[in-house]
Image 1 (cartoon, one colour):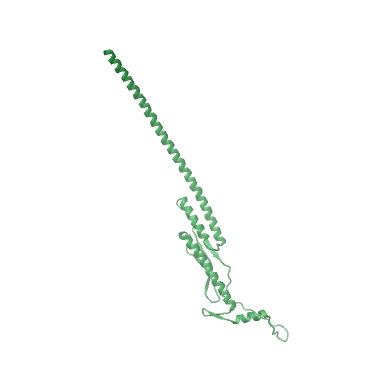
Image 2 (cartoon, rainbow, N blue to C red):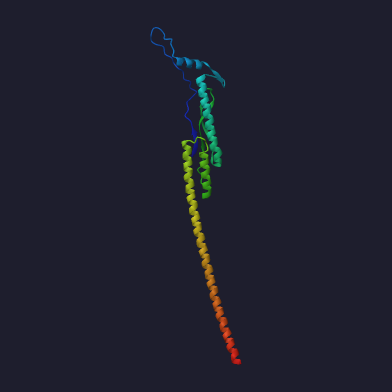
Length: 216
């Protein structure tokens, strides 16, 4: 299962050109709208970025790509930091910008939905998975799905833990009752032996007393 970040992106390596059509009349229409004049003026203002001359529109596209790249990498870094040993290495999808550089527009981090050796370990893993999925400031739909699955895993582990505790409590109860039965049986045997000894001593005392009286 993976937790990821996706951004809608445009292939900025393909530059679009605006075509201005002339009228079919014998005389060329030299009038241009104010909007077109403004765009043309702005497009004439270029800036060298990484050895490439970019116009105003391309610079805007570049800034958007750079922002997406930062957000995607920060998103996946948050997943990795919170996921610890349950999170794998981040992978990214790149697109080429107008400056011929590559920018990340999507990414993902694999996360192990791993159960522990005990219910307690499983609960701890589930909580870490939830923390990893929800770590970014802007969790994706897939992140919410991973978190929901981890919550389910935690609930199941808690139910298993309660079942084990109930079984252990029942065993302890049976063991305690068995010990009490043994102690009661032992006490009963001792009481019986004491009674028999007392009776024997009483009989001996009577016999001895009778014998002494006979000799008098």
